[in-house]
Length: 239
Image 1 (tube, rainbow, N blue to C red):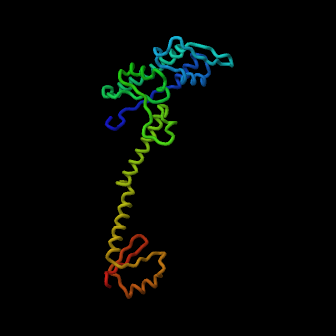
Image 2: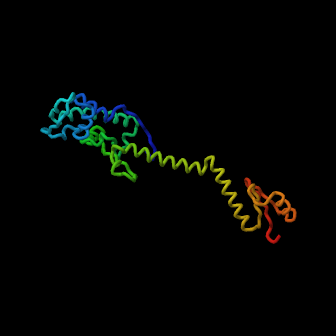
């Protein structure tokens, strides 16, 4: 709301619960239940043709069984209703239920399942759509799916947040004093270059200390300043 996150909550249920329900309900290995959920899953039994059947792999190496796809839907729909109803309760709890004019965005692999949007609109009583990653480059054909929307979104959010914090540190953080001091040093140095002749002495200067002292004895500087390890002896033009 107004560019800020106003409410967060964690529900301890998700798409993996659907897989376990299918595995138990149809007595099939978990890995096969996951494949069936992805390929044949539907969260709204009214959308499943009455005569459609699917093959269900059995455990223990036994032959696959042919069952109605309606049975699979009858296992999936109650669990999806539970998950979406829990989400609706959190929306009401947040106090922003009446402000969601644009509706609800669902992400994650389970949101891809047929019938999820229709079921969601019935439970939330508002528009529901799937969320896709935005503002991404590179392997877009791989991550451009609701399955990766949350992960990609968090990475983008974290990247922008880090960049903003880095900018604030430059402008007003502990390092800003050093940056300002360096700018002032270069500004003064630039002005010096415009108006004066000068000699710079440092630890690595080719002129020895005795040679420099003898030179300065015959050519006294108008003034001198020290910048770190460098000493600048200024001379007025014409002297």
